[in-house]
Image (cartoon, rainbow, N blue to C red; front, side, top):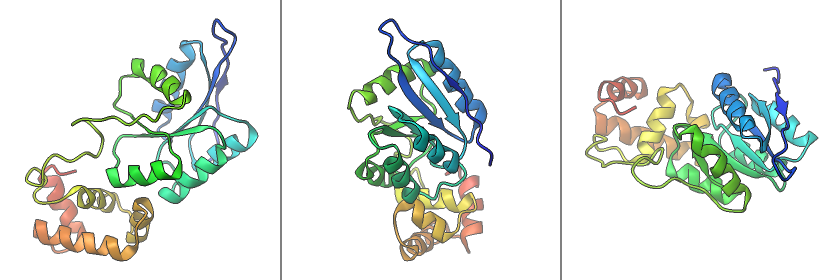
Amino acid sequence: MTMLQERASEPNDTGSTLKLAIADDHKLLADAVASMLRSEGTFDVSSCYDLDSLLKLLGQDNYDVVLLDLRMPGMTGLDSVGQVVKAARDGNVVLFTGQIDRHVLDKALALGVRGLIAKTMPLRSLGSIIELINSGQIFVPVGTNFPGSSTTDADNHGLNDKEIYVLRLAAEGMTNKEIARAMGATEVIVKMHMRAICKKLGARNRAHAAIISRERSLL
């Protein structure tokens, strides 16, 4: 995918700006966030829409904060997250996503990620959170609205958090190998999860499990 990049610099009252890179293949969302942050007058924002473009961007300049979408083209789970953290050097890499498993988030934090910003978060809160992260704090939402957080096994028809996460990725067409990379696990572990999922849902295979999960509003 060809890189599309937008940049703007509007100094604040002190003459300093915070350099931000937004990496998300949802162009409308990325551009809306970039436009809103530019309007605050304290952010120099660059946007790109795939992993290769982001790595090229980070190789050309230093960024204070990088908002990273886990599902954009080129991303292969935690391996790619680690690659971006390394490429960002002293920059703060933050996951920018709608859904994430707590297990994956914990592993990402261990790789050097500085937190999580949910795409469902009100735009008016985004600037202050980015500045908080840039000050050295780790930001992770807490409470019942945490993306990927569990309710109860009963609500999930007996499936736990990891099984829901595996099922969601499988339903989106990811292979066992791709799911394993995203989880930071092995294909054997993924197969074990899939067997447990099928047993709990009474499904014949992963495709049938995906159909059942949608009928029961699990995904």
